[in-house]
Image 1 (cartoon, one colour):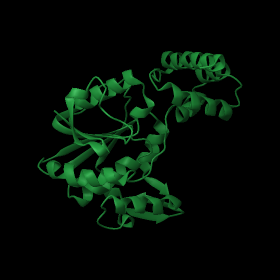
Image 2: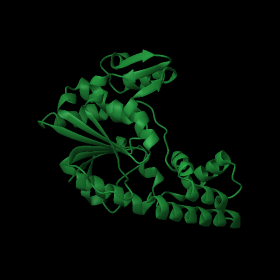
Image 3: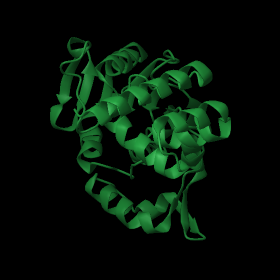
Image 4: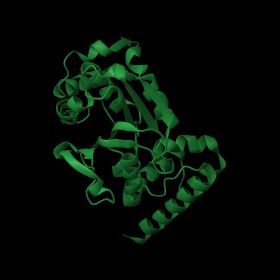
Amino acid sequence: MDEDTRLFDIEVRLLLEGVYQVYQHDFRNYATASLRRRMQQAMEHFGCTSISELQHRVLHDRRVFAQMLQFFTVQVSELFHDPGYFLALRQEVVPVLKTYPSLKVWVAGCSTGEELWSLAVLFDEEDLLERTVFYATDINPVALRTAEAGIYPLDRIARFSANYRQAGGRRSLSDYLVTGYDAAAFDRRLRKQVVFADHSLATDSVFSEVQMVSCRNVLIYFNRALQDRALGLFHDALVRRGFLGLGSHETVRFTAHAEAFEDLVPEHRIYRRR
């Protein structure tokens, strides 16, 4: 690491400490390399020549901090992302979930909602929707509002539909959408099963007992300490033999909770609480 990068990282750490002290949002255990890229993007967006200048603006102006949340958190997803994951859920997890009279599913770090609506569609097709409550949580209020609206640009629907078919979809994705004004909105029948909430994996505690946790492509932005904390929350939230779904580049192996979960579908990062 060169001297400029070392000093840049030190300034970023000071910014994160200031954000925690002022706003109680804790990004201090986010992965350094990813933070480095996003802080450089934030500097360009706000026209700052240094992290110190950015820090001054963030700490003294809540409006700037609200905009900074878009850089601290990542909102990149699509419906039925990694279709094989959803196909594996349908084949290996759904048969067990059908044995429960009622279900709670926690979609942690739901971002703009694509993961949530994918699960809602899948559960509807498996006759599980009416007995399920989905808890969709995130720290980013803008992302949560987008998720709750469930409205996506029409130019993304073709990609979504292709993923849906590969994931074993049994109808047409358009059956769940109402289109108009170059956008498509999910049917309100799906929305009534969802509770949206502000929740931080870095600072908050477990809020419900659930049969399944889906938290994909979130842990990759955390360092090991925060990954351990998040997995501890998932373990405590899950009922015995409950299911955990992670992203394709995430794992419970080599973490403090590796022994608390067993592989169910390892190639798709689906685990089961022991």
